[in-house]
Length: 381
Image (cartoon, rainbow, N blue to C red; front, side, top):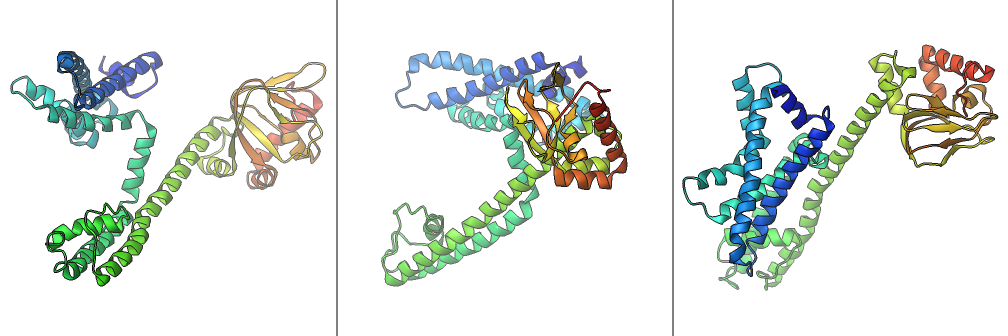
């Protein structure tokens, strides 16, 4: 039973149950967040407070059940290290802490009155639970962790500039505005809003030197705030490239043509292939066109227009290789029967690849000869 619940919580091996449980947890998160927001409205009808209380408590019961289920099944999803060790590791993890804090006010409320502000804070924390279901959030976390040293270095330099700007502006503005710039910590608020180019206007220098300092702080602020943004942008691009490579590698490994290749060869192939999505009833190649690439079908079906009987190719098949091998124009028009996901191998990369992997070249040429001779009904190209 524990293994089955673990599969429902963490995998798609039981798709219907997984979707239903996922929807239930997402609904519970949505309920606690919505109730917390509604209860802060100034014109909120207090007569409806009992209703919002009941639905919030129901949602928190669901999140409590989820929390204990995840504690119970944790040994199923981690390497054998003792059940207690696995569960403690989960409770110490960021998501484990979030799961605990999201339901803590409800538990405390059973024995001691808890102010609504704690429920509002717990609702805000529960939003981080969405990282289990939204891949983009895990992507952000991975980027921050990988680029942590660079981001930290940029923030240290920015902090130094903030304190320096606050100190200098205090020295020159204190006498003119003792109420606004009465201390360096208070001047730090001006430095932050100025270097971030927000400029709330609640504190502004009036002396000529103070205004000069403010202008310099703005310029340096634009430059320094751009550094962490650039680090994160490059980190996102790198992480997306890695994920795309992993997806392509897995896709290539499932193609029968590449099934016998070792990991290094598959990696070489994956780096050369480019993904392409094709909608239904779209011409992928046309008879007489110059052959510029061959295609591997990852999802969907295509139809080769051959006389008298068209031929269909499906997931795992490939087409377009005959025109590349024989150095001729396309011999048939191919349409997508359904929405298709293809991997494209350009002609230059094709010739480079078959030169690097002789056994792959032999297999493609053998398939090409069979198709041309009519021994294989699946035609291309």
